[in-house]
Amino acid sequence: MERENAWQKYTAEKDKKKVFKFAEDYRTFLSNCKTERECIDFFVAEAEKAGYVDLNKIIAKGGKIKAGDKVYAVNKGKEMAIFNIGTESLEKGMNILGAHIDSPRMDLKQNPLFEDTDLALFDTHYYGGIKKYQWVTIPLALHGVLVKKDGKRVTVNVGEDPSDPVFGISDLLPHLAADQMDKKGSKVIEGEDLNVIVGGIPAFDKEGKKEKDAVKTNILKLLKDKYGIEEEDFISAEIEVVPAGPARDFGFDRSMILGYGHDDRVCAYPSFVAILNQKKASGKTACALLVDKEEIGSVGATGMESKFFENTYAELFAAMGDYSELKLRRGLTNCNVLSSDVSAGFDPTYASAFEKNNAAYLGRGLVFNKYTGARGKSGSNDASAEYVGAVRKIMNDAKVSWQTAELGKVDQGGGGTIAYIMGNYNMQVIDSGIPVLSMHAPCEIISKVDLYEALLGYEAFIKNA
Ligand code: MN
Ligand code: MN
Image (tube, rainbow, N blue to C red; front, side):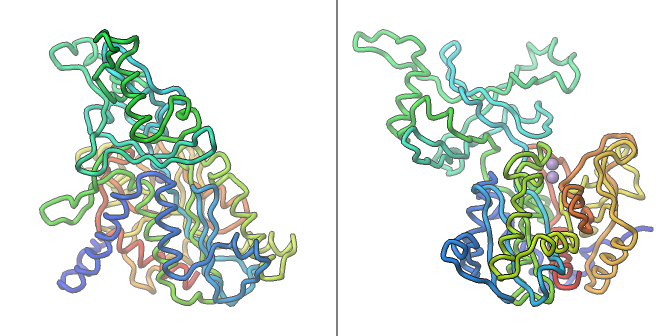
């Protein structure tokens, strides 16, 4: 069966305005928040404005929480859970909106700066699944943090302000690319070719002679003077190389947004806003869980595999004066989850990679995937028919535009999300999300109406699941 196009609900100018207003807020967020840390800083500031309180501050003071309270917890600046505490016991579970805030990119290596033939370059190691040939010859920015030898943290953000310089990776001119053009796509640009050019003026000594590694020396001098950074500081740094410049409206009708990092901030943002928009939690506690490291397998302290969420759940019980190990386990089991991540939007130019009856379409609303995975659904979470039925009813009752999809044709590829990890707690979990074109490219494309339907769907879910 074919699903309706969601724009038909917004033919009246005043209705369309709501869609565009929310999209504009999101576009601004996406333009400003290009790393997981920047996303968390933004979410914390917004949460505090809305009256949310840091759970760790409450714990430190030996404080208590109760139904109606609004709290959040941050994990190492890169992961966050935000809770609108409901009237039901935490033992009854929560309604959780999960999404990730890391995106494919290049990271500076620990010893990044080198000079070759009068150019200074940064060596990188890419993060997540990228087609490397897409990341050359585009303007790039540097975002991140450096921790200096005295332990002080310096924030880095160069390449976004129109007066900033930008950086970039070169490609070979077509005139000399005979050998390169015969290579297959995965080899056209290789991992060690992702060198970011950062400078070209040598340092000269007092006699006017060029010093050894003179361009590198000059860049280090500049970094020292302007930012107080020394070469060794790069060892204790997390600097991400990302596309420079803001996200833009896309198409004559401005129906879409082109930008870096829709995967998965396009799900994280409406998940977060849905919690903020819920003035009073209904029975169940509502939660948005915004995690890091999904793009490399949800590993490490700030990924979904970490104990952060489980531990925070325990802290909530304790802060309500109601902690027991058994109650915690029951609470985790009783959670309902929308695990949101972007879906592969059907692309008419690459139609052969999709199966038309089970593809996600731009403009047809929030996507639900009963299962994802590769080959015989390997790595998938498989939502039960009962849970899919319950979610279907919630969406229909709230008149949300939604569709169902798989990730492309069977045996064409595949992918996983954080859903199965939440399933490990025996939670009810379904994959959901927003269709994206050019997923994992430096600039991805989403439809504004899908973003808006996701917000409506998330609001309905935390209220009614
Ligand atoms: Mn994703
Ligand atoms: Mn991804």
